[in-house]
Length: 421
Ligand SMILES: Cc1cc2nc3c(=O)[nH]c(=O)nc-3n(C[C@H](O)[C@H](O)[C@H](O)COP(=O)(O)OP(=O)(O)OC[C@H]3O[C@@H](n4cnc5c(N)ncnc54)[C@H](O)[C@@H]3O)c2cc1C
Image: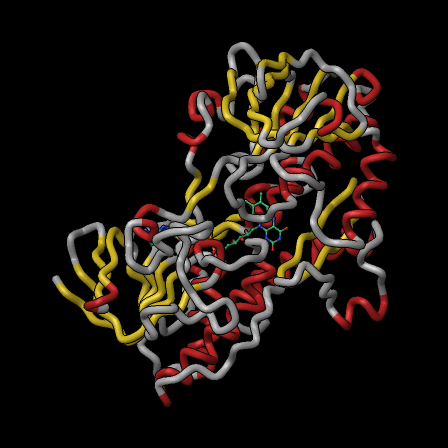
């Protein structure tokens, strides 16, 4: 069967619902279809708090049907193949959907196969991830009775780049309260060269690292997790003479080191799984075919219009945008897509080229403390002018924690997903 809609949106996540709601608020006569097989929609940003026992998982979940904006048609199945030359989306059922305009925002895929042993051991043997099951992270944190705790992330792009370290700060805080911290080594092991790329947030976080006595290991690419034997393996991605030269607050924890490959024992391991664009995107001509953005959707980074197919826009985690993949970024991307889509419909051109890569990362540094890192494509601080009038958001502040725990979820469900913010 073939159906046609004026605007097709693939993915009813943060980006898809926000754009659909904004479009229909502007003009309720638009014919908008949203394609997504999921029954549930999650406010993933609160999973960091869930992993630390400070938020209930069930409060991050809503029925998808309750969020699809009134006036939009929900096509509850997966897109399997794209044919942008013919404005056609192939669906799981074998049906096809044609469109005049497409907004592609199907988010990210977790690809366990990029780290040996990960699939078998995720959710077992003390190997946990807030990206996958934050309730299990909380279980592991409570069961940890001292030893080596390792927090790490893959070398692929990931959503919310700060999430792998935020949970470490909360875990440290929790273990101090439960008196196991002084029996523990807590390590952050990263393929990167710094803890955070943007000043002054980096300096604030290095002070947190010092205060908490955390150990940092840089240039370590995660390659294997051996759950049953509780060892994690890394390739070192920089030439070096002594391993300690690639570390900060180095402490020996039983590392085996052989020619640029190290393995370490762990009593608990938190990680972000390796991430890619969904297969049907990577296999389509919407994706970059080569280069560092290979597989992600090839859009103009300021207007979010596709670089080849002018009736296609993309935003959110699946788009090739050189900034952090967050819901906060989508809040600034969605109005640009909405405005440009309207202008395309009316005048066949785009008007708004204003997206400058804004993204933000609410870095919780303990229970009741948060640094709000906001930045742009240039890697410069880009703090909200209103918030900055009252707070220095580069400092660890209690009001920012309140914002994270109460303000942002309220804003997400009641304003952003309704197309009002
Ligand atoms: C642990 C964690 C902590 C985070 N913390 C923060 C934070 O503090 N602040 C912040 O701003 N952001 C945070 N994020 C990131 C934020 O949640 C994402 O960046 C955001 O949700 C991305 O929105 P999206 O619409 O691109 O994708 P998603 O919201 O993931 O939605 C994608 C949708 O596409 C659908 N889909 C997938 N494949 C198909 C298909 N083939 N056909 C049709 N539909 C499909 C999916 O079912 C899903 O509903 C965090 C994320 C995690 C996991």
